[in-house]
Length: 216
Figure 1 (cartoon, rainbow, N blue to C red):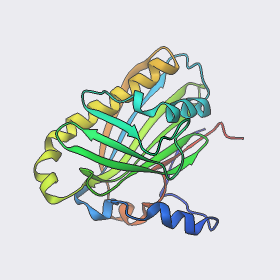
Figure 2 (cartoon, one colour):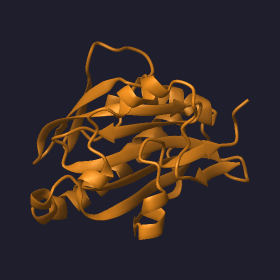
Figure 3 (cartoon, helix red, strand yellow):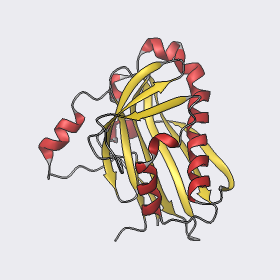
Figure 4 (cartoon, rainbow, N blue to C red):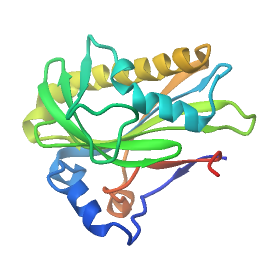
């Protein structure tokens, strides 16, 4: 049970659809500066939902969880219900303006969002839920990205680091309060500089990790 640290997998089925999904993305290879892996996660106190149910709920109400003072997400195209692969969202980031992101992967326990040109970062971020060995539900966000450009890296990026941490730790906390009774202990926030070998093996078309344990 838990999560699997992966470099992603893309099957043969739906190759053309996958190519359309990847078209125009602002991938980590397009950015500047070091490739950073950021993890934010916490155990949910007395979760009312299974990991699959948590992710169904989070994907259906995604714009409600980030702190509005820092970032606002808006679904484009009038989509309702859980986020769907291929769907795009407008993002209004304080200090950086508007940009867009796209859903590039979804399974029972996670979904992954990738950046589009104009976003201050280049890369992707996975939101997922799984259980630990004691059966507690964990909500986990993992991004792998670098700065969208050299200018952003030198300017917005330095101040954006703290804002990004606040955004996603608030997101984790809001999910825990909505799906249970808050977090057990504290919210973990870790940043790792990706090694060259790991970066070379990373599948930029897939999730940053696989949430596993409760699937049929």
